[in-house]
Amino acid sequence: MLKMKGFLFKPQLWSDLRHYDRRTLAADAMAGLIVGIVALPLAIAFGIASGVSPETGIVTAIVAGFLVSAFGGSSVQIGGPTGAFIVIVYGIVQQYGMGGLTVATLMAGAFLVLLGVFRLGTIIKYTPYPIVVGFTSGIAVTIFTTQVKDLLGLTTGPVPADFVAKWATYVQALPTVDPWSTAVGVLSVVVIALTPRLSRKVPGSLVAIVVMTVAAYLLRTYAGVGSIETIGDRFSIRAELPSAAVPVLTWESVKQLVQPALTIAVLGAIESLLSATVADGVTGRRHDSNQELIGQGIANLCSPLFGGIPATGAIARTMTNINNGGRTPVAGIVHAAVLLLIFLVFMPLAQYIPMACLAGVLVVVSYNMSGWRTFRELLANPKSDVAVLLITFLLTVLFDLTIAIEVGLVIACLLFMRRMAETTRVSVITEEIDPNEESDVETHEEHLPIPAGVEVYEINGPYFFGIANKFEDVMATMADRPKVRIIRMRRVPFIDSTGLHNLKNLCTMNHREGTHIVLSGVEPAVREVLEHAGFDALLGRDHICASINEALEVARHILKRK
Image 1: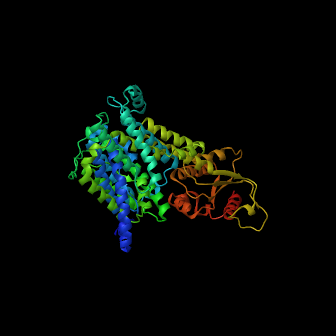
Image 2: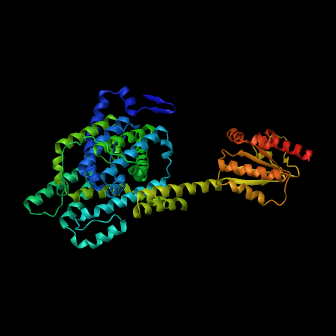
């Protein structure tokens, strides 16, 4: 366990190994074996869909899967390539090549480590839910769109990256639909959907790949059907791990790739913490979000050195791990070892897998990822949430995920500020205060009178930049200029720099006009901020009071002097 000031490096694996026994090892080994088998077809499919080779997807699952389990903050998290990164990775590869993707992934890994070191994991978990659902559903639609060509066996030229142009190309190419490829793709979806009814232990994607690969091989060999494209027709398969290589970093490439790297980091953080939170709800344990981000960062720092792509926590594989008895990170390490063994021994057989079958696997992935039921439920929420949901979804589909996340977060922040401003109220009391309704009044009288020439204003809520001008607007509606203005701040939990600036200007202007400002019921935390800002000197220490009684007494003394 490594300690720094305000930072603690303590992977969950270290804690779980203290009380490890043979029974737990047996359960973790079985879960890791099953998860490794489940992860194989997904790693291949995600690699190809991302615009890289099938080996790249598996290498990512091996390296990142091991490191996420070894250094993460969750006992059951399974890391690897996920569908959420397909759109981002494909776009980076098309624009900057594999070298650019390597640099962007390394930078994203560094960002994730820094997020964990500075303990920002908890904040990231507060990403508004409509944004998460919006871009997740948008990614699902985009993934489905990218698989239409292989699913139907269409013959086209280069497929455009733009969503609308892509569908226009598909429509024009409809006469070239290959019935054999279409049959393989559709049957793959059917097999994946029906497999859980027969056995939940065996992954439907693996069954579909085995069945369709055998069928395609028999059709090609004995029936002369050569139109079913396979992985071997598009890629050359090598069953060997690439050697580690450090990319050449230049300032120009770093500047170009900062935005994609930040997108990878933010999406990876959200996805991994969401997966860990879902796992906590099932296992009853709690993950360390900051340590999880560090583990994800280490994985994304190391994976590209071996030619890998971005990785994060995978909800489906994590749930498979839990459902099959995995309880410690050892299961994730076993899953990586199983993938490594399969990669070295059986990888040449992957060349016979039909592309239409992989497209069917990704169609199911996109369906499960879409969360269309949740999307439909959110449409009944307040209009502001619906606006964030739809804008994020449409930007993800029609433009790209980077813009969607940036705009979605900005809109969500603006709407949050508007709601905060609406909850903060400014009221005016000019005659008397009812002690029965006040918490800071000390009197045995039925009513606490307000002297003539005194106005009492109450701020109810945070005094931040969203409502800084509201107070001035309320005072502007008062016809008479009082000799004393009492500002009750007993329900102000915090005040920001804009609120301080606004309040200071207010006090200065009133002083010039001959009106005294007295602050009442200031919370200790807010008072400390006011003292640092020099309000003691500006108003006088006796003008910042603990209760309304003190404030009214100060007001009476001021009136007597005048």
